[in-house]
Length: 564
Image (cartoon, rainbow, N blue to C red; front, side, top):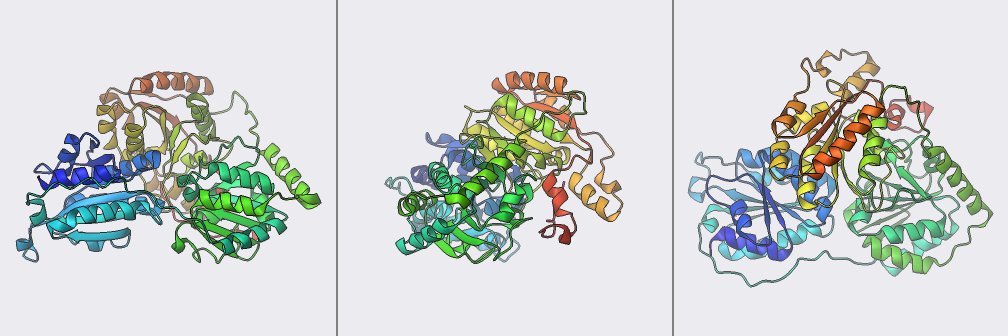
């Protein structure tokens, strides 16, 4: 059978369902996927968008996405999105081509050293030079993408292999995610620390979400009487209406919840590597005991050395830990901690603002969640004002929601591409993107594909007429910010309208409510809805302001680099 048909059949048998890419000069993997009954081919306009669409698909479906590329600019153009996929730990299988061996080193057309370029961000990469390696390499690629720390793998397939007629492969079945429980000794050590903790805090990351650990996570927090926080990628693992839920950690912690992190005497971190933005403003190694649970051994000894390291699946290990921990007598100290948690929860409850005040970014974001419901697919971007979307209770989501956000790389232009991949994967829920005008303009290539596939995406664009983050940072040093301001008005609305979509620019709460009602109707019918809200330069999330406070005024780390 033709090589591309064998490749399509093998990845489908292994459990992949979406192949993203641009059509190549000659029929290739995208065409073979389009022919295969168990695969969907998503043809995009731009490889960068395609890589982000793969992230959206994987986050929603839990399955690895396949990105079909070719040697040369095609591969290079996808690298920004693949860098983000690597940062997020998103299972992505890249299948690319190599030029004919006869032209290697002789100025061959579109020859680039793809594996060298991918090395810093790929978990595993391999050059398939012999036909009998092909099926093995494809199945191993899927295994490597989904197991251990999920991530990006790259297969480069030689031109000569692709020109071969190959024997059909026997089905071998789904490549499964492997799961193990942490050792009895480590679980006992963790239980011992938890029994003696007086002010414990639980933090859940993306690994907890991927493992489906929500029920065990809530059970443990309730047993401990501990407040629950998440990272950005862990959001959605629990229902944020739960009385122990306190939103996100680090840069995204609400001011009212910040003291709980400072006062904790033990922190249990589940499925997070504790990247910089998660540590900001509260994490000081040695200030409290630390238990870390992760399925990937490289997550340990990274941000800090834990008192107990639990290597295992989050859901399985938490259930084992609950069994060993037994019932816990909170005692007087534990009761005081629960009282403190209740006080913070009361402070976190939203206070209605004056109806006649100017429309703000948090007003607009909260209204979107109210309009589309807490079970939605919510896609974040990298920006300044849209960062409000990370703050609880500005946004409160259920454990049936899917939150998609950039990782520690925070590329600009992530949101629309990721929303595209999410929306084609799950049409049963609304897909909403929160982004700035600069980020929207950088990812416009996603919109025609979204329109073609009737994706029904709502875009809330917070328009500050430029790049808000560098403008904000420059304001603290008195630097000139003229280059951060756009001299022309955004053209995103005109693009949406040209694709048959609908746009609105509400300036009040009443106008916004009406616009959201219309957006629900438009997107339910598969259209694109753009709601553009003007925001002021001083509409700044609290974590950003904390990050720029003098270091001696709070327990702060230096602010991160950022854009938009």
